[in-house]
Amino acid sequence: MSLRPNRPLPLATPAGVEVLTRIITEEPIPRVEIARRTGLSQAAVTKAVAPLIEAGFVTDQPTGPAEELAEGQLGIGRPVSPLTVVADSVSVIGLKVTPTDLIGVTTDFRAGIRTVRHQQLSGTTPDLVLERLTTLAEELIGALDDDAGPLIGIGVAVSGDVDAPHGVVRDSPFMGWRDVPVAELLTEKLGVPVVVSNDVRALTVAEHWFGVGVGVDSFAVVTIGSGVGCGLYVNGEVVSGANGVSGELGHLPLAPGDLVCTCGRRGCVETVASSDAILARTRETTGRADLDLSGAIDLAHAGDEHAREAFDRAGEVIGSALAAMVNLVGPELVVIAGEGVADYDLYEQRMREAFAAHAFGAAGDARLKLRSHTFDDWARGAAAIVIRSYVRGERPFQR
Image (tube, rainbow, N blue to C red; front, side, top):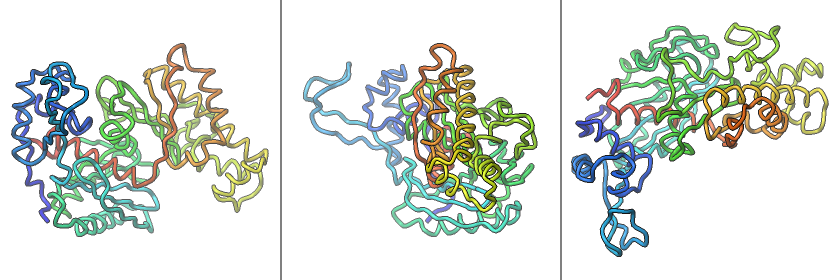
């Protein structure tokens, strides 16, 4: 198995990047449909596709007589040759970092998961976690079989403020990290290009390219769990922010000011709406210090007024935060995801009431969609970041 990205993409122009992006995200898709959606001429599309087919990244396979043809295609009954990505042309590794676990996956060029590995962590110091990440990556590399394409890179998803262009975790309160050069250190250890991203932004890229965001003009991914995060897709791009920070829904000051967040600030949404905050509130009001989260959920389902109050309070603040977000950005779809959606029914009503009360005008027409995610999906998001960087020729894959 080749570990280095020895399969450079034959993309010499921005048009070629746009064409391949359309194929990856909307396959199977005929050349004429790419031309229609991009505004490129069919000749330009054909010119961009030809080297990708020759190099084995893309294939066109006639599907037989088409019942419906797009305007400008050949006559009725003539075969259509849709373009698709050759999934096994490359392999990618995605790694998700949490304070207690590491989750790793291998994927193909379509971000289809092939292998999954989990490892528990005994601490969160950068040296320990990077050592364990190296071991996990080596294990995943060893799991690549002869049918897998060359490994082009490794993606790492971490919560917090991440300087993605330089691969540095500037501030991760959950991990207790500041200014950790993850990409540089892992590249030295593994000899493979490494891309580092905020975990929610990575999940949003995966939804944009391979999930619910395909074909949607604008959407937001709101994650609820140990933290509350938000990824935004507007104006044709996942928002990263001028300084690499955006969509920090969990740190809007919408909660009581006496509550201190893990980030060190007061009144953040996370101080009320995260799973840790809900558990802490339930323990406080019930006097049950022995409760775990599943116990708090069971109490709430059984009608315990103290447990219900904790979830109601969380729903109120989440709904207000969602309303603030749609008022500012105006997405057509809001995907509610993360491990916290397992108890979504306990706060959904209060959340929707608060959302309706504070969303302004037509912004409130945004569709709220529940989407369950596992930690494997977060790791897949890290792999999707690698795929996007590889296609676009971004660091560390500059062409």
